[in-house]
Length: 109
Image (cartoon, rainbow, N blue to C red):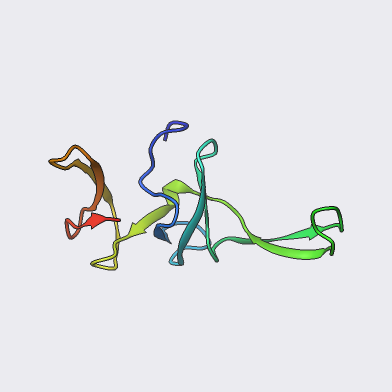
C-alpha cells in the first residue's frame, strides 16, 4: 500500500492475523502506524525488551510488549457473521462513506 493511504482496518477494530508466526490469533487494534504500514494489535506479536531504570520507568527489567505487525497480514472480523472478511467501501444516500463486510453485506462500525 502507498504510504499514508486509507487502510481496510481502523483503530479499535477486531482483527485476525492471517499470516506469520501469530497466524490465527485475534485481537483489537491499539494503533496504526501509517508511515510503516503496520498496526499494533492487543495480545499479538509479543516481544521482550530489557529496560534500564530511567526517568519514565522507575523499575528496570524485562518488559513484554506488543510489536507492530504488517497491515497486509490482518483481516477485519465482522460483528454480524463473526468471520474474518474482506472489506468493501460504499457511499450511502446521505453522502457518508462506510465500510461493509463482503460476506454478509453488513455495515462495519
